[in-house]
Structures are given as structure tokens and as C-alpha cells.
Image (tube, rainbow, N blue to C red; front, side, top):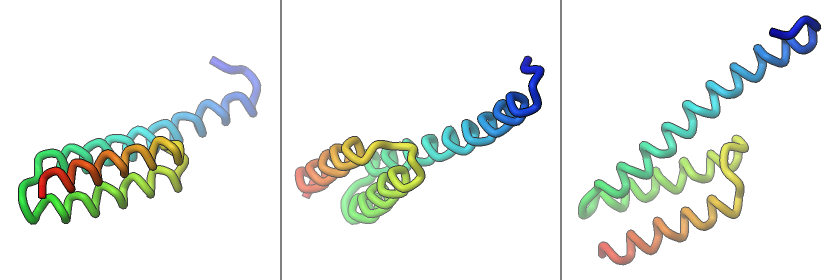
Amino acid sequence: MPNIKSAKKRVLVTEVKNARNRAFKTALKTSLKKFDAAEGEAKVVAYKEAVKSVDQAVTKGVMHKNTAARKKSQLTKKLNAAQ
């Protein structure tokens, strides 16, 4: 446990940010799984939601932009293959 006041604050701030990032990553994974599970016309809607959540992950700093580009490319390929 830290003794210095600034170190104590860093521990608290890190816990808050860690919880926020974990929640966002969980929501991102959920939207990707929903896309994989979707069928037919629902797959297009799930695709739009998944791409939106990937873009938000980049904005929030949870995911690197190149990783996001690769994910979106994979999603698009899966969508085109399903149609």
C-alpha cells in the first residue's frame, strides 16, 4: 500500500479507469458475439452496431486504430460471405 498522497491517488484513479475500460471491453466483445450469432437481416443491424462499438473503442483508447481497422475488415468479410 502506498504511503505518499499522490501515490494513493494514482491507485484510486487507476482502479476507476481499469473498471471503465473493463466494462467497455466487455460491451465490445458482446456486440461482436451478437454479430457472429445474428442471422439474415439482423446480421446487417448487428454489423452496424459492432462497427460503431469498435470505432468507439478507438476513441476511448481501449483499442489501437490498426486493430480496429483489422476487426472492421474481418466483420465486413463475414457479412459479405453471409449474403
